Structures are given as structure tokens and as C-alpha cells.
Length: 361
Image (cartoon, rainbow, N blue to C red; front, side, top):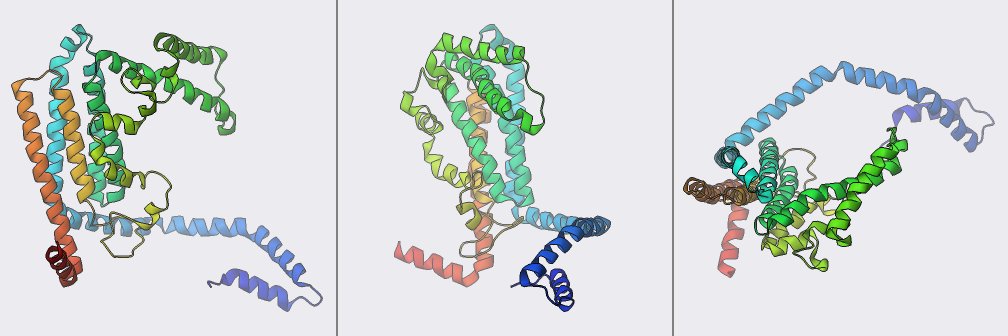
């Protein structure tokens, strides 16, 4: 068991200078010494750490830069292909928005408005994932892909339904604001925030009540904006996912949930550790980028497709097809690199396992 030398030294001094002190008296004296010395000792320690911080940070930053350079050399092809896909997606989405905005306004095409917003957010998240991949954070990339998958499911659901559903989705923001307001009111004082005025509270309540009167009492419930399409029991993300036939991605989605929520599996399993290696990963890793990389390319292409087919042109259909072909290449490249790492790390043992699996298959 690790010994605290500082406290042990104090304890020894007290024992040596105590004639008639009981063990409880010694413990009380120890507590008083700690209480008296800890604040100043902590300040001294912090000052020392801050004084050494520049040298310490430069050392760690250099290690980081060298690691990322090695990682990029290893994963250069799939990461470059993925980045190419992101640029194609963002530029084609922007071009579609600029070309179709006025037409969508004239037609009151709410579906187009929602899909533009979804696509913009999807591009931002995809670039976040790209940064995480380049940094060696496979679990973090997978966690962000989880949101990208949710956006893909949402984009498909909006795309395959009418303008009314899209409008109900947009207006549901006011329902969310109502419930957020209730949380704010409950905790504002404790957080040191200003309390809302009566007028501010009434404005949110009135807007919520207006929408409930318009659409019905189910509208203010979770996923109430889907009420015209889904049965009450299916008004969940899983229900929407099944409705759009994207539930085949659920195993990946459940895996990604581990890195978002507080379940124990995230502490014992990481994408960044090679199979059978019992390592507690506390930073970046050169391994495990294949799943989040592949999934990101697939989900972003799905979302981009939903946007571009609202007003289909031959050029937009070509872009969709080109992105689909690129996804195939991206997936293959990510898998190849990951398998090469596994072979280099596990060597003959891994190769023998593969041979055994094939012979038994």
C-alpha cells in the first residue's frame, strides 16, 4: 500500500513528543496539522507546477505532434479519402442551398429548410469526427458518429414524409424550450443565474399552449412531432429508426452509446485497444479508426443524398453516385489499414488464428 511520507513524518514527530497522549489524541492532532498546513502546502505545490508548466507542456505537445504525424502516415489514404468526401458533401450542399432557396421559399417547402439545417449540422459534426480521427480518438469519433446517425435517421424521416411533418418538427423547438425553461427555473438560483421574469415565462408557456391547441395534447410529449406518422408506442428514436429502415445500424449505435453514457463497458472496452490486449486507454491510440471512419462516410452520404434529391438534377444525381462509390473505397481502405496494424502487432499468432477460423468456416 502506498505510504504518504509527509503524513508519516508528522505522525512520527507527534508520537515521539507525546508522553501521555492516547491514539485518539494523536489522530486529533494529525487532523489539526493537516487542516492548518494543507492550504498553504497546496499553494506551494500549485506554484511549482505552474512554474514548470511551460517545459512540461512543450514536452507533451512534441510527443503529441510526433504521434499524430505517425498516425497520419499510417492512416493517410482512408483519412484523405474521408476528407475528400466531406468537402464534396459540404460544397454540394452549399451549391444546392444557393440554387434552390428561392424556389423552396416560393413553394413553402419546409422539408428543404429542415434538410438544409440537418445537412449543415452533419457537415460540422463530420469535421469534428475527422479531427478526432486525426488525433487518434476512436471512441470519441464513434460517440460523435452516434449523433450523425441520429441526423441521418431524422433526414430520411423528414424526406419521406410531407411538409406538415417537417413543420411540426421545426415548431417542436418551442416544446423543448418549455421543458428547458422548467429546468432553468428549478436550478437558476443554485447556479447563480438571474430568474426569468413573469413575461418571459408567460411567453414560453403561451407558445407551448398554442401549439398543443393546434396539434393536440400528444404534441407536447416526447417525439410528439411524429404523431401523424407513428403510433404512440413507436414515438421514440428507435421507432423512427425502424420506420426509415436504418435500424440495421443499431449494433453500432448501441456500441457508441457506451462512450456517451455512464455504463461500465466504456471503462473496460475501447475501440483503440487491439483485440485481447488488456489495456486501460487514457489517451490517444493509433488503432481502431475503421468503424467510426466507415460509419461517418456512410451517414454523411445518406444525409447529403436526402438533401440533393429534394430538387433532383442530373448533376446532383451524379454527385450522389460519386459519393456512394467513394464510400465503398473509404470503407475498404479503413479496413485494410486496421487489418495491417493487427497483423503487425499480433504477428504469426494473429495469422494462425485467421487460418484456423477459415479452416473451421
